[in-house]
Length: 594
Image (tube, rainbow, N blue to C red; front, side):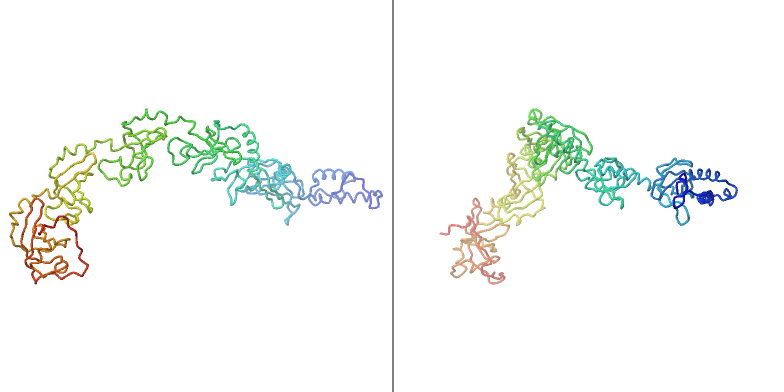
């Protein structure tokens, strides 16, 4: 709008006549006439009246341009709109949600808005408070960016790749790598917190703002680090704050520099995870164990501020002391028992039971179980204590010889067979051995399975108890009368009888004469019943039936010697394939046949 106080002139610069001046005044008042036609009557006003009206209109129609921030008066607040007057020919409206930061808004209040357009298609002024706020804030953000100044913002919500930050009402993007000096394991815990940020990227056209908190932290750390490098020394005790926790330890902020508190330096006792000792944000005192500025590594210790538990441990836990503790670890060779924080003892697998053959410690104890044990040995220098569980009970082997004197007849179950004998359970956890030589009076047993089976219940006699070496010798044949004491009456010399070949020996054959009694036929005593031969295997084999006669009985050496006088031709088993029948060496079975 033209300046109404400038003296009116024509286009050539000459002064206007009175009529020309009046026409110009009318044209200037035309907008007012359009708005209030009832006030404009051409013939009722003099030139002076026109001047006064123009001055009044000029005061209500200030000069405004699109894209400017203007002051507006709240005329009315509707359900979702706020009606504003900016002193223009028409009013404007702004969505009520743009005033959410002004909950006390009411009619008559003056606010600042952005004039986007003087008129829209409906002739209304287009206004925006949100954009006005953005322009005000953007100017401050721009100045902070150009002057490299920090700005304060609040972490609002987590999005892909980072976090949205509220900077004075404007959204900015904080990349995940710029949140802190190290990766943040749980960003949700930081939401709602307010921090200082540096603007590292700005694009007004796209309204793109990228900020960084890491830049500020690095600057602060550099300053603190330089100061700390001058102050920090080994063996110092410093205050720190737990910044991060891993499986192997915790990182402690010493005030600009982080140090590692390893899990092994947290406690003299055994811990499975650092969270048992520390939590993020916890303030604590730590001792500086080592400093390596080149690698930027500082080793810290927490347990080093506590008393060394192994001091005077020998006096505290003398040998023979009965102690109680908790099982904290189990290995193949034993279980570790925590007697107190920082002091553990080992119960070796051999010290767990007097009687049971423990294959693995987990068969007797479990993690967390409380047990009693006896101190067997203490080595403070090696930080070792040997414990025994079985020593808390009386050794049953001490009273076993009194409970089962030699010659006692008992029953037991066969638990296991070996090539040399059978193990029989005397009591739960206590086994005795029946040696293969003590299984039969008469039969030469090649394997225990020929006489007993696993699980059989047998009657045995105690032959010997060695309590020191924990061995019991049992006899199966001793539970019966020795038939050799009357063998002379049963098998007198000259008695003719039938028998069966059991096996071939080096110098003869072993035969079964009945009643589990075996006799021996020397090779020289076969000639009477057969033609001359070079090898016994040519004429006899296992299972063959023979007619024999007793020629010698020796009860002392438990031997019967026989001669063969006839080999029946009928009812004999088939000859085995050549080489399929082994020749078993038999000791002391040959007789002097000279």
